[in-house]
Length: 177
Image: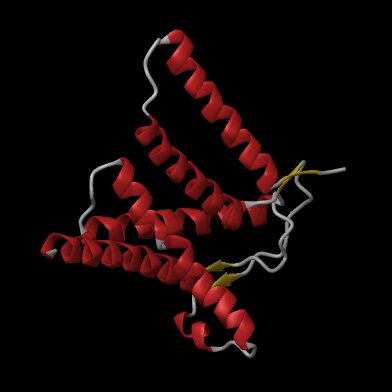
């Protein structure tokens, strides 16, 4: 019998780790907790949870065996959908998934240049696709429809760049006022 680590499990795990971190700061280090900084970290944490739970979960323990592994390295496959709902879910979903990334990075760390944001989005997207491949090969994922897809990498990176562009446009408009 396999146990599935799913979105809820990941959220509970993140919450426990975060609360433990706060308790260490307050009780052991005797530092003050700044609400604004903690709110920023919570935003990043929730986005990270959303990204990981959407792309990598559920994970089955023990593994169920090797699944059918599929690779899509055809960029033109982006236009081969027969159902518009599946196209919207896949294309827009992959773009929208990475749009908040720049906001979450920017409010917690220093602002990234467009080139740096491109590289961060590309790296994280490739990492997710590699982890999905490992999940399929190892049997940790029970997704027979999950494929390692070059289009996901392209669309995720595009979403990261759209997030960067929206924020930079907003920042320029705000400084003109």
